[in-house]
Amino acid sequence: MSSEEATIQQEQLDLKKPPEPEPEPAGPTSVLPADGGVQPSAAAAAVAADDVAPPSAEETTFRALVLTGHGGYDKIKVQVKTQVKVPLGDGDVLVRVKACGLNFAELMGRQGLYDALASPPVTMGMECSGVIEAVGGDVADRTVGDRVMVLSSSGLWQELAVVPADQTFLMPDAMSFQEGAALPVNYITAHMMLFEMANLRPGKSVLVHMAAGGVGIAATQLCQTVPGVTVFGTASASKHQVILDGGLSHAIDYRTKDYVEEIRNISPKGLDIVLDPLGGSDTQKGFNLLKPMGTIVVFGAANCVTGQKKNLLAMAKTWYNQLSIGTMKLMQANKSVSGFHLGYLTDLALIRHTMDTLMDLYVQGKIKPRIDSTYHFEEVADAMRRMHERQNVGKVILLPELKEEEEKKEEEEKEEKEQEDEEKEKEEKEQEKLAEAKPEEVKADQG
Ligand SMILES: NC(=O)c1ccc[n+]([C@@H]2O[C@H](COP(=O)([O-])OP(=O)(O)OC[C@H]3O[C@@H](n4cnc5c(N)ncnc54)[C@H](OP(=O)(O)O)[C@@H]3O)[C@@H](O)[C@H]2O)c1
Image 1 (cartoon, rainbow, N blue to C red):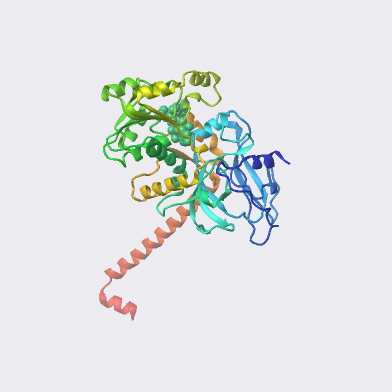
Image 2 (tube, rainbow, N blue to C red):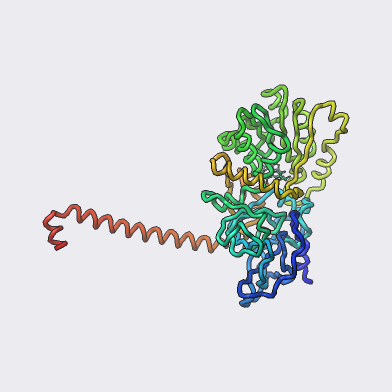
């Protein structure tokens, strides 16, 4: 078995289905099975290589972003995979991926700090949007041509992906593919923390760290769906105007100011809810900031990450300073501490219910992912650098389409538009000429 085949078998979804029967031999309606975290219906048929011969009629090739080892940006490579076409498994759909979301967890995964990602080589990607190209047996509610968002533990940063249909979510007509790729992880996380765990209600106060990031913007928008909620947010100073315009009540530059002091100045009694993606000493600070009956939700350890490469000192510091509290003390404090990790949440019914709620909010115009920037697969290092260097305001998107292809398409569209405009102009001029002409000339012309 090749190492890639082994990978394909390792990359199982958290949301597992019962084992599937052996696939039928490839027939006329056959499609390829994708690897990478998504259901490998006939994974053993797959082969991947950097240099591949042209595919035969029974094969398909597609590009994927593969983590080849833990470390810096160079560890993620665009690989061309060749797979033998076989029929889709029951319950699966084949998705032509149009856009993918980049998450902070993927920066950590590249460094080897994210347990929910299988060991390299592994195809990365927890969310994408695209179009269904084929449907397996036992799939009643998806058809070819459906525009969908997809959620998985990994394996979605590739041009083609086979996924269980129940991990796809129909996109509203008005939603772009980039928005579709930006929504699932950030908004499900923010929604579940605020409404399932912290029971957000009118008049409450919330602290959102990384307020200009993907989850931060989602949380701020969701807070605004409840009347009278005050949202404090920490972010780099250059991003404050955008997040204040987006509905944040108070923006704090954590790089130059003590955010605890700033919050106490505005709200001396403290806060009702703290969302903590940082870990270490910030969890302790967040806990202390809570009012009685308040809740802190711990959902990340960004303090472990200081740059491109793994930083053992930062990891040790974060671990050493983490909040440690006995249950008796917790009881006396009248506070709650909870943890959230979407990668370990296997309740698909709850996820689907949350996505339904989010789609209603999207259609009503109450939530809208903010796209920071887009990068092509071959620019994945630049995309990750943008996040590491704390430059993004909103979501960073990866596009499977080759940069040249996109430029060519844009050029063609431009030419088409110019031609249309020219024809329209010509037509308008002719109409004007006709209108200016004397009635008898017109009659003569027509005669
Ligand atoms: N548990 C879960 O299920 C779950 C799901 C999704 C995300 N998360 C967590 O939520 C957090 C946000 O994730 P995201 O994907 O939305 O990313 P993001 O917020 O877009 O991340 C990038 C931004 O975070 C801020 N930041 C703070 N500390 C940083 C650091 N050490 N390195 C780089 N940037 C840092 C920077 O902005 P400023 O300088 O402006 O603050 C940066 O622009 C992460 O901790 C992530 O692990 C958890």
